Length: 435
Image 1 (cartoon, rainbow, N blue to C red):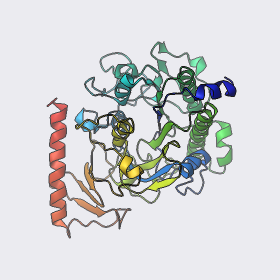
Image 2: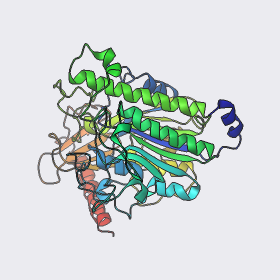
Image 3: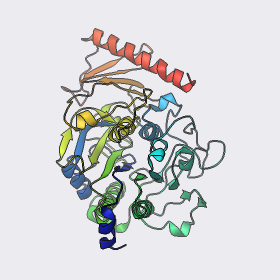
Image 4: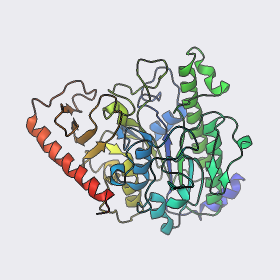
């Protein structure tokens, strides 16, 4: 496609913004150079953070991937619709444990009546593409997909699917981030050519296990042999593709009116002291599966030059559940009352400094030592099991590293937050029962 051709199309491009939700898999808060990593180089994410809105207190919807992905598409907590933990992860074709219920309305389904075309690319992890647990992208409002049901290798991925069936293995050679971005960019170019607003979900597999990187992407990190070399290389490959995405948006002359969101789905995998798990949560306590900050506070950026011409930093709490209500508000659409997320535009526009709505979390199985329920309200964070075991209360303004438990000295605050958490939990149960 020639640049002059797209310049001619520019005057008749849709006025509604294009929307892209990009997400890394298991990238820790500290796994970017803009957040201070002393080894990794992420020039394209750094450029996004410098040009757009950087969120310094952004939370994934859950400490593991499937629930977070559901929150990003529905604006609702995954415990409202029964996706409690990561889906089956024993292989690309193993049956899912969970599926996004058909009664849940996704962002793609909200956007379709507004004239959008929607495509999903990369890791789905919200159900299978066939069978008993079927809940594929096309079952949830997407027009097309080039996706996997769950994790794959980050080089030479073993299985991708489209709505027409399995993609031949011969077409899946090389860096996985590049493979899925190829499909995403083809979708975007088609939409621009049709002068149709697009919604693209681009969910990388990197740097999730089994994490490997090509020789070219590992080259700057060979002094860190083994897992670190591959981990850094996989993030470098992801970063490269984010740069390619931004460059393509500029080439197509749609970068100004495209909302480009980026985040990770949870904190880094593994043990912070292990060479086998080189990801970092930066200064925060905990990692993936944990409800301590390191398990749920993630890197996040928004670029939307047509609305936010100057860069900025948001220190208020925000979440993947906020995507849907914020996007609906930007499109001047009504926001459903049953959402857990909020419209972030007042914060982004500088009209409000603090989040005026709490954030709630619940998880199951291994939580790496943290309680399995959490309530965050402004500066206060309560971690509890609601079972009589020790509760933890932290003042995140004074102690973001969660080093000093204040529960004993603030029993009234604990009681107030606990009561709100119990009410929220009961409301989730009613939602799952369809009430």
